[in-house]
Image 1 (cartoon, rainbow, N blue to C red):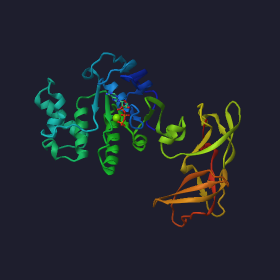
Image 2 (image 1 turned 45 degrees about the vertical axis):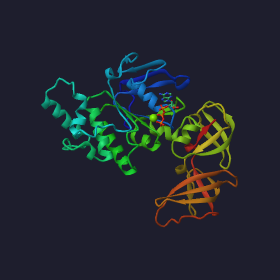
Image 3 (image 1 turned 30 degrees about the vertical axis):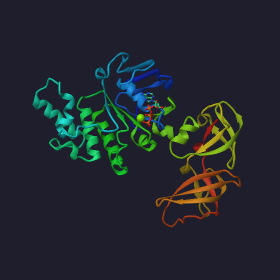
Length: 366
Ligand SMILES: Nc1ncnc2c1ncn2[C@@H]1O[C@H](COP(=O)(O)OP(=O)(O)OP(=O)(O)O)[C@@H](O)[C@H]1O
Ligand SMILES: [Mg+2]
């Protein structure tokens, strides 16, 4: 992780609410975004990601609360007076202009000389990997190249914060993955704060120093990718990020820093208190990621715990196989993933297996 907490604060939200008429779109947003951080807003459609981004940019007023950028309260500060710039989903470049004219568009009123501006344009194009493309017609570019022109056009204005609203969603999978890496490199190179909106959890995990996971106008968890994946704060976050098995559990006892639970199919297990985020409501469940469960072959011994199982489903992926397995003679089914290696057969439905697991990989939701 490149993220470190000693960076200066670039953006701070204090109890931000936003109503569209009666509709409560942002419901008390709190948190900080650091200078130079690659930050993502992640959540399902309609959860308020674009709304939050637009309130940072100043395209949308907030109903109450405070947004500070670089130490200044943004109340009443117009969009064009904020140190932010936004790249939109539908990369709105001007098709009738050249690439250079597109990139230089924001410098129209800049007092610098023509030559200096041309140099700035060339620099911005080089930054996004489009050196020498200045004279091309913008309409003669691929989707990925247009996206880069839009980035260069935003970067040339040297914002402190670059706001990106699903900038890659219109690209095909290959190009999107390529641009993800390009964006990470670019952000490291220019060092400015990037705030990316995405509903793609993989994209957020790959790209971000930290991620705010949003549901229904609220931040459910704000953390680095590894913490989000390994220690999701709620069942809903766990379910949204990657695949998580949920096993019904009973809480047996609780001391200062440990919780003993009986997880159906797995048995009794002691968990650290930090594996058990407190959350009142539903009946307790234990969460396990598929890659933390392992099939044992022949006389292999489990390093920690093991449980008998029966294979119910086999899903072959080439490099991996997913097995759905009933645990310990119960109706509890979990999905586990095994890397396929030469000499290790893919097993069949109905086979009896032994499953190794580690108590430290469990998360209790209660
Ligand atoms: N101008 C508006 N007037 C009224 N309601 C709005 C307006 N803009 C957004 N909303 C509502 O606010 C909620 C949040 O919208 P927002 O665009 O922020 O969602 P989002 O998380 O960006 O979703 P998506 O992933 O689909 O882009 C939605 O229910 C939306 O219908
Ligand atoms: Mg949106």
